[in-house]
Length: 199
Image 1 (cartoon, one colour):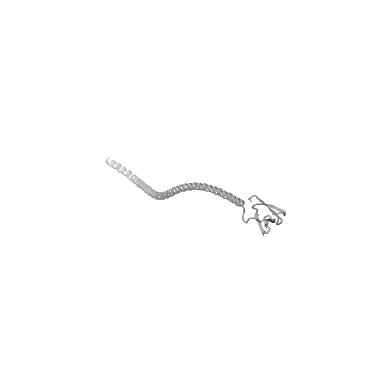
Image 2 (cartoon, helix red, strand yellow):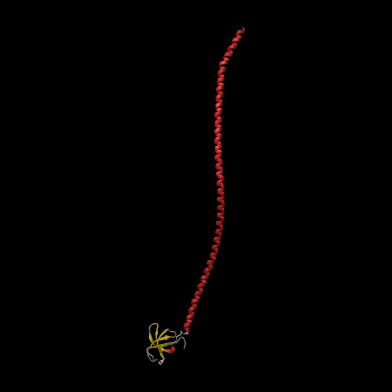
């Protein structure tokens, strides 16, 4: 008996009864009854057809072709799984390379940001120093302005004092001129009188 043999499913327990169906070897059957005296078993196919087949043509175990088909199917599944795993491995390698590249880029960006942060800190420190210098200069300007106002006031005071002195000198000179104006004519008159007395 080979796996390619076909068996008759008959209507009764006799090799002369009507053939219901030809069953290829390996066809799954449900055994309903076994008649050891006739050598037939009543069976049912998956499609629901019931009939009789020689008991010696039945087996509780699948035929070798079934095992072979099952093994081939399992082999195909394993092959597909292997191909899928290979593809995933390639994707993982690609992702790993991309991750390495991304890590390098992130490291470079981190270094650049660190450098910029240091520059900002230096700039901030310089800004604080400049602000301090500016505040000192502003205080110095305010102090100089105060000194300038003081000098202006002193100059104004000196100018006022000088103007008063000149006014005073002018008054004195005017008074002296008036006095001379009174005295000189008298001196002249006396001289003339003296001269007349000598003649």
